[in-house]
Amino acid sequence: MRSFFRTLVQTRRRVRQRATRYSLLVVILLFGLFLEAYMHNFNLVYLILFFLFATAFGAGVFGLLNIGELQASFDHAQRLYPGREGACYFRLSNPAQRFSWAIRLHCDEEVAAIPMISPFETQLVRVAITPSKRGRLQYESCTLQSLFPLSTVRFVLPIEQCLDTVVYPLPAGEPLQVFLQRQRVSFGEESDFDGLAAYSGAESLSRIHWPSVAKGEPAVKVFEQTGRRQKPVFDFYGAGRSDEARLSQLCLWVLECEQCGQPFAIVMPHKMLQSDREGIDAILTYLALY
Image 1 (cartoon, helix red, strand yellow):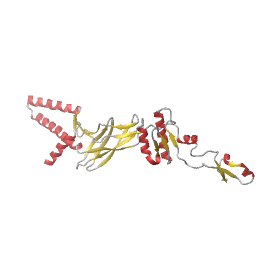
Image 2 (cartoon, helix red, strand yellow; image 1 turned 120 degrees about the horizontal axis):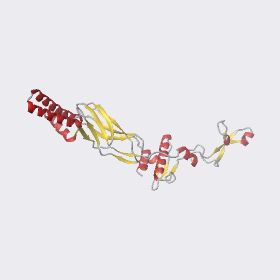
Image 3 (tube, helix red, strand yellow; image 1 turned 180 degrees about the horizontal axis):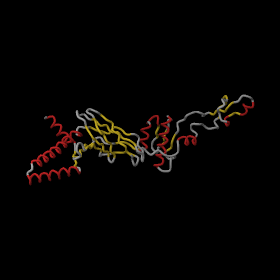
Image 4 (cartoon, helix red, strand yellow; image 1 turned 90 degrees about the vertical axis):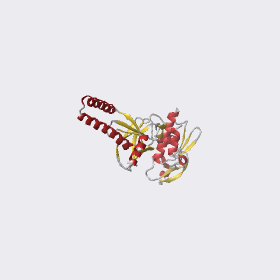
């Protein structure tokens, strides 16, 4: 019993309680029954008054124990972009020996419902979120809330480690293949002639060496840089007309290079970013916070 009250006191210190519209209803009922019992001295009214008071008091105790021992913290987030719905994940743990019911995770205006969490269970709770702009995204008012069991009190448990992540620039602009064709980085220059090779039948007519065909030995022209994959270099100032357009264009190229496994470099105003050194996530974060 002493352990129970100790747990209840500790829980009461962590959890904030807020009144609901049903709280007002309970107060009105208690006041009305008290007046009825005082004026007419009906035993039935006394019993109903006692039952209602005990139920409301017991609901408060059960509600505190339902949410008070839960632990929650921000875990990670998917890649977020302005105007696009993404997801953030919170780690929710129940170290108690009792079930917790009807929990809702509130993160600013976003809400995720957790119907039940078992004793000693840990869940990864997904919260949908749509950022409005790039940069660092921080929420300072993430809470666990519950109306269990009677909705007469809203129990609120603040989350100490709230959402803290980065929103990347919205990927938009010219596709990577268009840029590579325009720069002729991966395909080589047609002037870099490097000899002849046997004709396989799959080459285009522009590569056929017609003098060889006339001699009865079909061959194709080979160029020095044909098939050689060089690392493309993206220039910040050449990527668009404004900073936001440049960041969006660079973000698109970074994602497309990641998808096809193409190493690259970005020339920023005060720094050179290289994918094989910094890594994709570090480069995207640099663009987001620029």
